[in-house]
Image 1: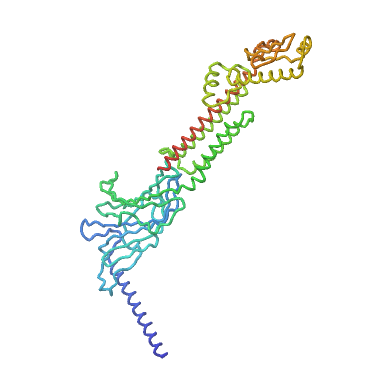
Image 2: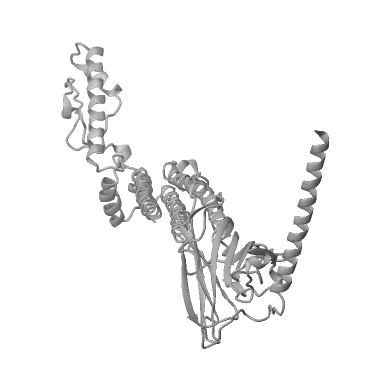
Length: 482
């Protein structure tokens, strides 16, 4: 049994060795016969004016990066080319059925295919590339490459933008009359494409063109593949847009700070510096192009302008709030204190002449006088003759310099009960009457300027809020619809 097995193994090894030697010899003989008298410097043609038809197929392996400031797209491709060479044919029956073999690409003629917008001089990884030749003269040339092409970036709708980067393949020397280039399918191959962390690959359609250049009278064909990309915007929304909106909204708090705090301008300047940092980050991300203006940059500019407007309004408010005792111009009093104060719902009841102010003053004086009258009645339940006169001089003087219909009349012989408006004295106080008119109006002037400052503060808040909401709504809706 062992002898038979040993004999079988020896026989099998001998046959394999002989057959392998014969196969290698056949391939060597086939190669020698095929390349006998072959010149790779001449394009293949066996009939006069015969055109070589090159079929091109591109498989996108991965998009590495889209450098937007420099407008460069770096990606990995699998290039697949096929053409016919009538000089590389044989009969498979003459070589024991061998219908194809592999050789180095440098040994045969290859089309001078070029990627027009590439920043590299030639395809990478072509050294040592091999081709497969079949018995009917068909040549299959497949090779991987990593390339970098120019891509015009349109960031109008950043970060919800879509980019289209063309990959234009064509022959550099041969015109369409000598070599024709066509794509294998209407779209490139995306079955092996890897995902990119920033860009979503939408498609790889292609188009064929024939262009006549200024250098030459012939038409030159090309096949252009369009890499369609869509930006994944979640990162920019969470890290750039939302923080910017929140920071710009904080600028509204400057209107809520009281003028006495002294921090209104400081808060506006701090927010302005923060928004400037966001603007610098955006500038590093986008290309320095003057052809298109990103809507997000317009929104950032509007927000910065509104914060500057907030700082300006804060300065004006502080200026009027602490203004010296100079009278408020009549037109300012009419426009701002009378009309705008009502429209903006600013409380102006502290101003003399205001109906609420007058009613409040009357009520206070009337209540005080009535209480004083009741106190006197309890203190002197029965007063006759001169006793009432003795009490009367001890009473503190009552005066109301703003009312003219209320009076308190002290009598020498008896005490009159005080009721309602009759208890108010419209006779001016001698001590107050002796004061200069400007001194009596100091408090009123200061109050008017302070209320004017509040009106301007409320007006700035209204303008800032409406502008911020409208600009945010318009820009974000436009970006989302894009």
